[in-house]
Image (cartoon, rainbow, N blue to C red; front, side, top):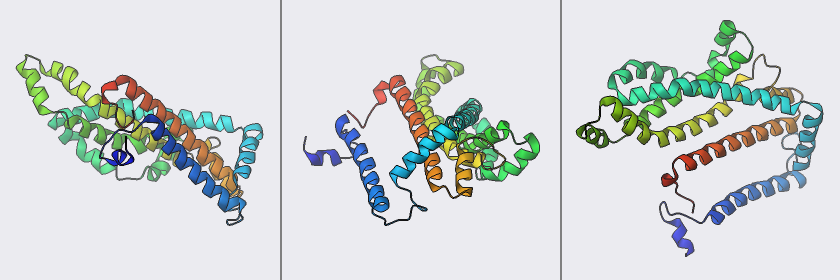
Length: 266
């Protein structure tokens, strides 16, 4: 296959090339990092070297309970995301399937989704205290409202012709929903869950910003307080790695559930 073939719209590429391009991107970024730090172009206070990051990571693992912070953060993200999904996906399905449900819920959801989750922190502390529940609630608020509208849009895009055909073949409204709407919307719902899980990770630091004594967000803020730039970067990298792992798990589940929809990589 000629190189120009790879630049056609939506053209598949070999899996080796796909993986190689990703490794090249990371390698180029790492090389630039080494040039800036080992070459003395950027002070260590602003950008520590890879060696400094590795040493700080080992220190956090051996002396600063990094794994305990990881467990605390994973629990909060998982709980907030699962709670948002358990409630949000059914509501989004109803809104996308029934105009009366959309008319009832969409104005409220559309209004609240523009409110920053961090603005709710003082109220949440007042209402439910400063424990894990408050941090889970921040992550819930940050993902739930966006998730509802995205699931609504996915459900609305299900072909009306498919639904009408099911009615013609004798399906009831319940059967049409369970056999046509839900299966057709499920791939899009899985994509929505994958995207909103990424948002849940981005809200982690906000959730652990106030009155926290554990978690990766707390660790990052403590490092900032004592000007441990390497500690800040370690926390950011760990959050990014955890997010990448969960994203990969969602992709694997998507490919397993919908093999006929796989594309982009051969």
